[in-house]
Length: 158
Image (tube, rainbow, N blue to C red; front, side):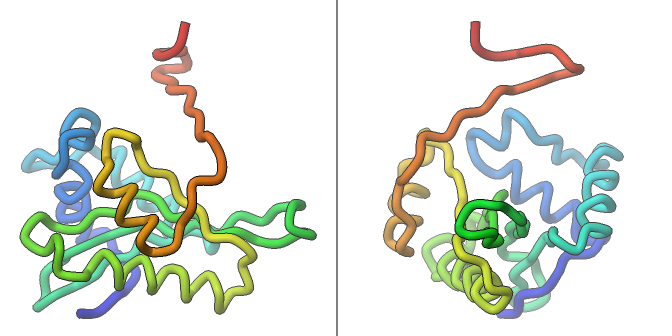
């Protein structure tokens, strides 16, 4: 298994991974042709030195992915933090340790960079993911909140 930064050619496989669960199936578009918005987002991530989409490859196929973002901040005495998002492992590889190696790889990159905190969020509707992250040493510490926007209008809440 190898870890590397993703490239544009990887996007269809990455989008399929993002869509391959009950929550992702409702919000991703993993058809034969993926929307241009994915390419626009990838290009923005690719140009930002504080962002990277990472893929795990097994025998030449993408078996997992995550986005790693470095966030400068004033808290922790001006310490940088690493944010992990969009973690997915292909269904046929789940339970084989790829997720653990992928998260461990991201934590090590954050440590090498001097980050003070590694953080992530996971949906409460994914109890197996919560257990996985806790097994990796992550602890629930804050209550996350989201305010979903669509076309500039509030879509959740009130």
